[in-house]
Length: 289
Image 1 (tube, one colour):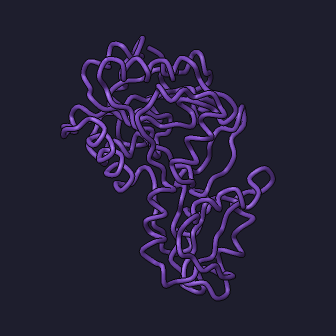
Image 2: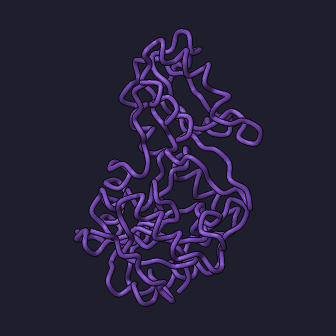
């Protein structure tokens, strides 16, 4: 049965009455890594004023409180959300459960906050018990292929890898840079065992809904939960797997595939959804009320 691509929705105000909780992606929806998107922040704030709960759900490989401070610097108003759940939070739970094992950290120094306050023993790849991958050492100049030899060493030792950021690429201003998901996918292709801590996998959604229920003070039906995101691989597939609706934003990482940020090609959009085997509940060029 052919998938039907939904028509573009004029504004979030048309969808908002049908939902009690929004699980919104961060990078590509509320900011682009350089600055906040004021219209998106306003839309989420208006949803909250109307009684809705907004939980930001991000594949950032850092604890939620660190993500919050980053959002402050980018100009994302705290009025736009009730809480944050990051893949870093999920990863910390895995690390805590492996307190007796040594870890090799594959990623930049800026992600070291993921280990803060935990009882961690670091080790080189030759002696570590498992690996936490939070990204490339230098995502400005490197590609996943630069890591093939290192991953071969990790695979030869049969090490388990935790991927702290399942995104393959992310926008940084007007550029796309590689993320930990690209490294983890290559390791998986080599036969390595990978646990993806963030979207599109269930643990991060379960934690986010739990936080929404706590903020709301009562349970919420999944039919009243909406995911918002710009990635087919993480946001759309994650929503489908978890059993919730998705609002897909086209001006994020798929913008170049769609031909234009302001006037995306409907045929190309349909092709992307067909390849994924699922379509969202609604589509917008960018999140706005």
